[in-house]
Amino acid sequence: MEQVLADAFLNFYQKVLKPEFDALKGNQAVHDERLAEVVGHLDSIYKRLGILEDGYAEIGDRLKLIEDALEAEGSENAGLEQQVKDLKKQLKSFQDRLNVVERQPLG
Picture 1 (tube, rainbow, N blue to C red):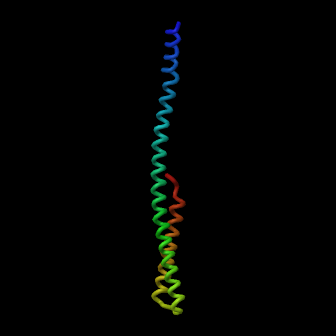
Picture 2: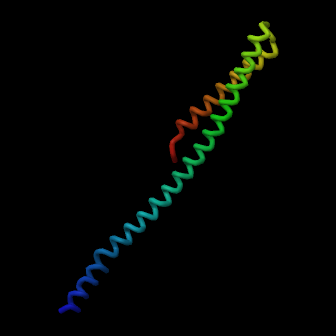
Picture 3: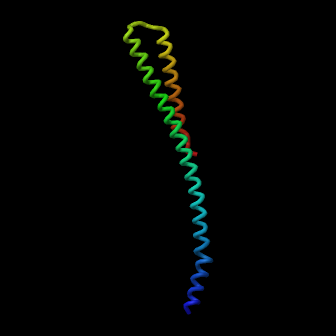
């Protein structure tokens, strides 16, 4: 009787449970691969975002220094004004690039 019961359980396991477990393991492997891919994309986006933020901060700091220098001199230095305009353009460009990165889909 015990052997018959053991054989019945083994048969049930092999025909019903094992295929289900194998399918679950396969699905888990696919999900793990996809998750690793998404994490890689996120790492790439965060790295680019960090670079853009650093550039944005640097341009903002330099712009502030130039504006302070203009105020201190009390004169309209054409060279500094052009630098300010250029830095403002660069700052806008960095902001636009930052906005593009933030709007990118995750994959």
